[in-house]
Amino acid sequence: MQQTYLTAGEAADYTGLSKSYLAKLRMCTNKRSGPLFVKIGLRAVRYRRADLDVWIEANLVNAAGI
Image 1 (cartoon, rainbow, N blue to C red):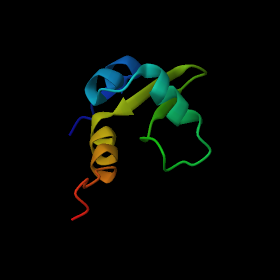
Image 2 (image 1 turned 135 degrees about the vertical axis):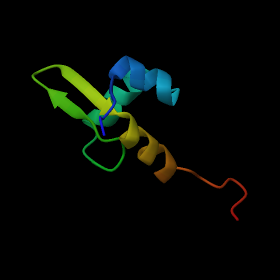
Image 3 (image 1 turned 120 degrees about the horizontal axis):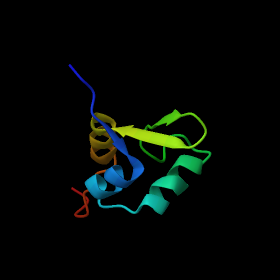
């Protein structure tokens, strides 16, 4: 099974978040705040689509409190 890797821009489009917000999440000291990512070299960052899906599901909030 081949992994699908997204650039920061593609990940931003996929999640509906901005590239700058994803960058801020990468810099957070709390490793659990943002989605997992792969750093390639000094600047290249990639996200696995499956990791983005897991992160989104883990951050679902039931506004009704049920």
